[in-house]
Image (tube, rainbow, N blue to C red):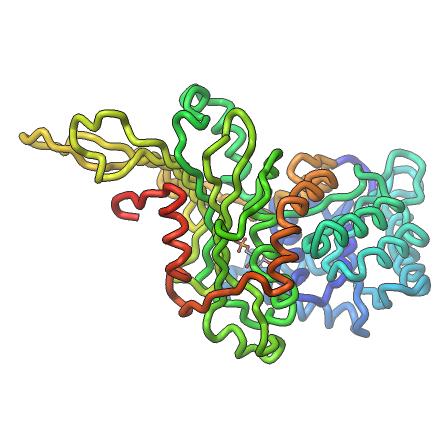
Length: 460
Ligand code: BG6
């Protein structure tokens, strides 16, 4: 870190995101020495009236989830909490933000003695409905005041709007106040280890260069499954649904030149029991499951379906990308039914990259079997701790590295792809099919996959 003060301001400090993700990520960065106490101070801001100690009590349990924390961890927790100060105020009044500014300035003055630069990082762990007013309040009251190279940066998270129009409106409102270089839009999937590895894998290896096209690849599947429902989040979720919650952002690498999505290439589902949440209306058609096929209209990918699939309350928890190759012409070993070549990147759980291929079954017979070339991170990188996505992204924000954040034009492109479909769903012209919790989702989705050319490989 550069010298000077760094103030990290968590707005919405008493909310779920702050407790479960933001503060634990800050704590881990602190433990690794990235937030030196000589430079860093953390401010929590929210509407509730609380003392510093009350806020600390709320977050303490989330910092080291294990009940049997070692004395060393407990000491780190208390040292970390010493850096935290709480300020209460509303999200749309100058008064609260002026008070916040005063507190930040007081600390900066002590740290820098007017020499070092002051850096202010505002993390909006808040619903997007208050982004415009909070950004305005920051701009009016809380900007960095040092004129020797300091900065003010804003971190925001999805959902960025509900469709193209509302997202663009939100972008313009924030864009009037801050430059693109000051805005960090988090999609935490971009901070996951294997997502970051994709670019390296693709461009640092000769294997992929000649194969990465429509002549060799039959279909690509990007899958997100969770084995739990929307527990406690029904109120939020029902307003958004699985396409806005997961597919439009986490699963979509922005793909240019996507054809309009056709209804017959979509299957929606809703798990039975979803409406038991008192926040979810009985008439809700909000999908908790969706399979959507995207078709890219360019020289490399014409004709290759990109199958995006996401669901809550399914039979397993998994996020992966499966690139399935075409059949080998000729099939001289009669091994076609064992399955095709597949290249798989598993993001979670247990990060892995593997290739499915056909080999000779060891032994006297000349028979074949499908096997794997397997890079499992746990085995290959024993003892290496894979950082949490949020840790990496917060550190990038401090360092001013925007490459793993969502740019405004990417966000717009992602909404352009999904908005017409989302509007058809909102109007009720596509229905969510019921499925039982703990299953693979509606059978119609498997049928759609098969129709798109996906062939189940052995053992999957
Ligand atoms: C969030 C979604 O963005 O990502 C949640 O709102 C989802 O619905 C979560 O559960 C999944 O993140 P991860 O890192 O646990 O796969």
